[in-house]
Amino acid sequence: MNPHAFSPEERAAVYRAIAERRDMRHFCGGEVAPELLLRLLEAAHQAPSVGLMQPWRFIRISRPALREAIHGLVEEERLRTAAALGERSSEFMRLKVEGIRDCAELLVVALMDGREAHVFGRRTLPEMDLASMACAIQNLWLAARAEGLGLGWVSLFEPQALAELLSMPTGSKPLAVLCLGPVTEFYPAPMLVQQGWIEPRPLSELLFQDQWGTHAQ
Image (cartoon, rainbow, N blue to C red):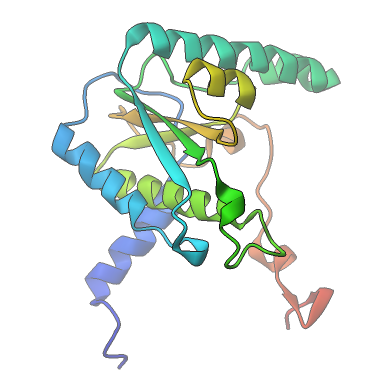
């Protein structure tokens, strides 16, 4: 037996959180206790980051007027996205794509400014700052699910407009509006699958061996 492995019960809990994580759009108000919010953000902050650059910055939105302004930016992009989708426009407009007005907590996650100074691990792959930030969000997502809270990642917004709204410095970039809070229930399957928007592909189609396109035996 591997002495470094968690107990069977602990391993099951980790895999359950991964399997039952959902991109939530439906929230039921309520609140997230300050100590719980801090615990979730600490989990996010423990994410791996290339060169330990920790590129993530979290902005907690507490003013109702600011929350409403962010909702307005998302709505503008929702309409532009619908237009870009052509024949699927009407179908897209029927989807619920955010829970900004309903969630208990609203967070904006952004990449910091001055990232060009961090060369370690990014000289040939500068986008590793984004990969690091995504790991932080995934940590937050899984911790929230374990705590019984829903989280939804909203990416429908024009980054520069949101950056200006939040007085962010030049070179920083917002990449996620996160809706967090209590939910009545978790979707039994991803919402886009339930709504018939898309079907997920099995791992077997995405796993290659030795070279691109050669499927593992």
